[in-house]
Image 1 (tube, rainbow, N blue to C red):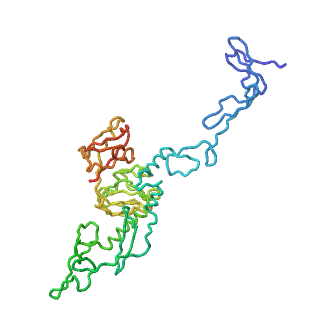
Image 2 (cartoon, helix red, strand yellow):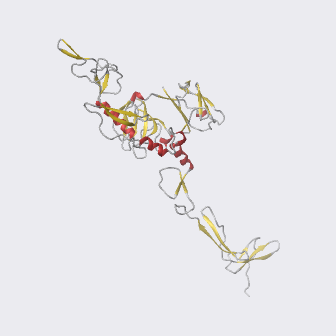
Image 3 (spheres, rainbow, N blue to C red):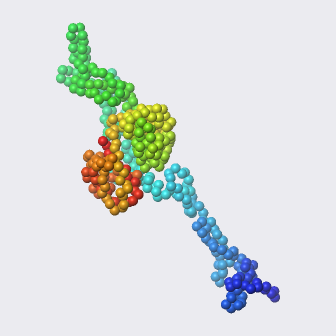
Length: 404
């Protein structure tokens, strides 16, 4: 029989041997009993902690309850065919089938899609609504209008041509408007042939204007300006999902307001228009102050208040809407008053009470999300006071604008 050589002057709890071989007995010193107590035979299992955030502890136990094998088994990573651990991504630009989207990004995507129950007319989903707005109208493709025919079009509220036909013009008489034949409605005096000046009530000759800023009902627009307007309409028609990115100062070329959606893809207040790309394609900004500046990747461009700059993905295209778009005025930021308790707040511009006229002439964003007005919805406006249905929490962002 082999003799054991225990350590001299052991401390309470000391083990001998410290790492026993398989089948070798192990003892623990008890100072209270002044003796080495038998613990049991070694199993060969490494002492330690099994199982963590990325591993599962795997054990084999004998019929007597003795652990004779232990190891860590890695938890597999998730994929489209395998359940397992998954990493989150907090953006919508990462292309990785092994990652999962955060709830925050899902919320932002839902905000962009909007509430399908508010579609008018109602549709089962946004795709159906878009197809209804840009689908086939049934209009026969072709050229309308000629030297003897007048093109007649029916346009819906979305600006789409839903019907087109050629109409023969009426012949003018002394009591009816129409085309003028030689010898009719033409005056001859002292060897001079004269035609009446055109107006909104009388057919006649008129002068052309080559701009869209002249407000004169006795002038006619040039074909060149009609062409430019048509190009702008075409640009909007092929942009099925245009998104407001904010407002820009035409004198400095810097953004003065940025929507939450635009901020996510690189637009920033005080900065220039980002480089046009597939990411910002069909995003547009409205000019809040006239001037001349050079859009990123483009040439110096003169613009008026209300004009649009629309990203085609390749360049920033100006849409000279001009005075047709009213001037926006931004309300003072009241987010510093939000405490999660108070619901009513003053509406001021430059610290002066400024009630929107009418009360619906206001657009409100909380935390970058557009709010729905009216009783039972997000807020109501009475005079120069806005009352929220639910008190805004501390730290919630506020932006509101009205049209002058």
